[in-house]
Amino acid sequence: MMKRTILLLLFILPIVAYSQIPFGLQPSFETNPNGHYSTGLGIADINNDGWKDIIIANGNDMQRQRLVVYYNRGDGTFNADPDWQSDDIDYHGHLAAGDINKDGYVDIAVSVYLGAGGFGHPGKVKIYFNQGGELEGTPSWVSEPLYSFSCALGDADGDGDLDLAVACGEPYHSIYEPGRIFYNIDGSFNTTADWQSNIAMGAMDVAFGDVDRNGFPDLIFVCQETDNYVFLADDMGNIDEEWDWYSDHPDNYMNSVDFGRVHNASFPCFVSTGNDQLGGDGKIKQFTFVPPVPQHSVPTWESNQVGYGSGILIAEVSGDEYMDLLYGSWWGPLTILTGVCDFWDPIPAYTALETSVVEAIMMSDLGRFNYQPHTATMKLIAKVGTIVLEHQQVERINGVFVNGLLIDKSEYCHAEMSNAISFKNHIMPGSMVVVEYDYMKHGDIVISNWDPGKGNFIYYNDNNPVGIVEVPAGQTTLEIRGLSPVPAREYIELSYYSGDMHGLSLSIHNMLGERVLYRELGSIQGAGRERIGLQGLPAGQYNLSLHAGNTSRQARFVLTP
Ligand SMILES: [Ca+2]
Ligand SMILES: [Ca+2]
Ligand SMILES: [Ca+2]
Ligand SMILES: [Ca+2]
Image (spheres, rainbow, N blue to C red):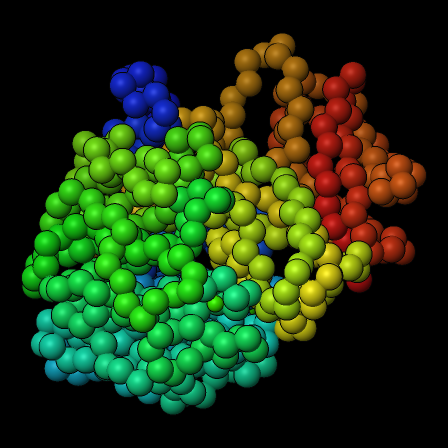
């Protein structure tokens, strides 16, 4: 029923009025509410089938509930009820996704705001490791007690693995705590934080971002009651325990943060939603960092009043080169501001009709209809530990080459959907780095909703079809729907669609144009999958071609040793 509704909405909605914003005014899909106080949101391929799944942490400060996963049905659509749930319950806050132990499977770190006794009892942060395509039922790592509403994954010590940064504090009762970092030690963690900020904060959110552009990610905390703080990394990538910047701004009551820049020519900035439940003016603030980073600065831009501002995301949705700003609020609509110059037009370009208590907003092309392959070539003039790709939402990294050599995944790390890649061996001046990746174009919007009577929302992008596309009889179509795993090891699996009955064949060529493999797939109409063994082929880049009649489709992949 839901799929039919989606298709109808796409045709009925007045898309002319919002021609540059490709979303309908109502969610295209809503999960069953199930009484969930949904808070944490992640988009990542948990079961390694090549399709990104939706991970939701439920509970907030309302009820002890479960972490759940909705698996992608292989076409960008989802079941209305979770396909997986954790065995344990907690007052779950926000989450972070990334392959923490580098076994090829995405792991999930989750903040827990309160302890089992509720307010007055500190929560914790914990990690559910992915065991070969399924998260473990109970987290195998749990931190010391602390109040935490949010956490982030990034390289905080310049060694090319994902460390866990934790926003700490409980502003409802004016409990301030130091921010924490737990360093990744070959995939495991001490239960007591290795790093503590030298100042206590009422931090609600945390983000990694190279604020001073020294080639190493820094740490941003946004707070309620206390100021916001930035802690800079030194030239070895170690983040300072002493604060380096604070926001010069009275009555600071911030909820969520995102880091990025409005345009490739812009300086780095972070944006944060004001939430005036406890104080402040309830506006979104932007802080821009023009080097050298001062000790404190005022916002470079403010929105009109939002009120109970919550989830926020910098993403390109309007089709120009300027990043747009998506935000939500408690009992408010999804709202989109379009980027102009180095900030955002405060008059919304889009306001949804549906309201909800928005917690987190993310974007990804869930049906992989418009993954954009891109090759970034960077000649470095100074030593760096982390490179930042020009596209804000990176769907997947297909291969990383340093001075012409494909490097193994154990040599670098990146958090899911992040455009920062951190290296174990710092990249020396004069080196050439090439990154093959797919970035998001025409992404879908996913929103976690706290309302126990509302589900989580997906707004599908009007530029993409939804689900498996029905093709009228007689129309010739041929599609490569996916190649996985990326990069390939020993084999690659092709998923494809053929609209007509055709004799299908595939061939693989190396970068010299030599054909290294040819296979007949038989006469096939509809969707299919084919696993292709690659044993004996040298590591490197290859082109795969799928042929049907006079039509062919190509896709490139990387094979690692
Ligand atoms: Ca999946
Ligand atoms: Ca893992
Ligand atoms: Ca690290
Ligand atoms: Ca930095």
